[in-house]
Length: 486
Image (cartoon, rainbow, N blue to C red):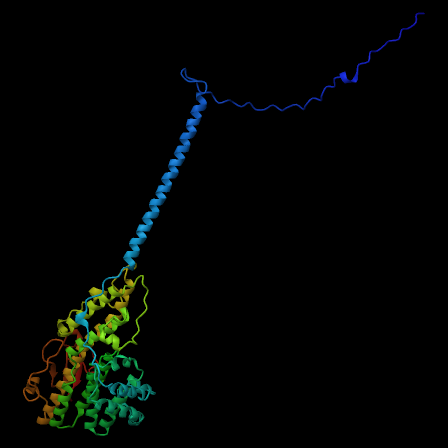
């Protein structure tokens, strides 16, 4: 048996062994992306032309964006400049004021310098302060001649101190109406005016009821005289309406006294002359309008350098207004125009007047000016203030008519006392009782007179003759002030 030869296996060095790395996991198939179609390369273009075209396109886009930004910046600058210009224009339009008006024709007479301070202002103050307050509703709502006698007596007695100051005030002949002492205090706003007027009315009614007619007539005429004198004072505008109220009450009281008087013709003639001198005067109102303008000018623009009244009365304050919609000088021009208009209307008879204030400041309570107007606050202020002065002009006309009616009643009662009968017509009063018959200020003709009904009346504010209208309070009908002669 043959011997088996051993199989000799060749050994490979370890370093030369190849170890195969593990196979990576299979990659999922990806969607095939379509390559953008290459631009055709023209014959004259180089292979780098596509890249150059892309760069140029990018530069064009950059330049377009920059140009758009420049335009936006330019537009923003233009808009800002336009806004700034508009603001400057509006600021100039709204903040610029007019020049001060030329108002030399509206200046009041200068104060009386270097004279002794009058005592009359202090006496008027004491008269008002000591007037007894009205404690009864009857005192406030009913004419004094309708009160019960005990109430009349109590009212007269409680006003004894005020009556003393009243007499001292009236008998003081040195009032000095243009003294600065009057201009420094607002006497017209004193709370004692109503009590004073009612108290003086009670004096008239009380003595008339006691049969002391002369005392009653003289007390009523004192009220009319005082009202007339107060209108000449250079003081705050509030005093003028108070003076008119005193004259109105005097007319009512005299009309009531004349209806039943037993005085003779001579005595009535003396009282008629006194009453005639208390007539409302247009010249006095024109002078007063100058003083009112000065007061309003002081409130709007403050004191003027060198103005004698501003120097003499430094305590009148200047009103504070917003600067945006209130122009002091422009507002003062409105006041000057309106006061000139009122002064021109005063000298006309009532039936010839044409109120022009509405064309300057708008109707009463409806200012002439739209929202946004540069001086809308000034126009509203002028409308609020000036119509009250215009009402004084109308009230002056009405009071003139009342005065003429009472004056004619004096003459009729004198005629009746002398002849024992009423005149058939008012022409019988000429020339003994009147040089010329008084004219109705509302139509320029003699007053209306009806002897059968015993009435004298004015056509009143509506200029219409409706036959007279007798009221409980004489002359209280604005459209036909009427008195009785019987």
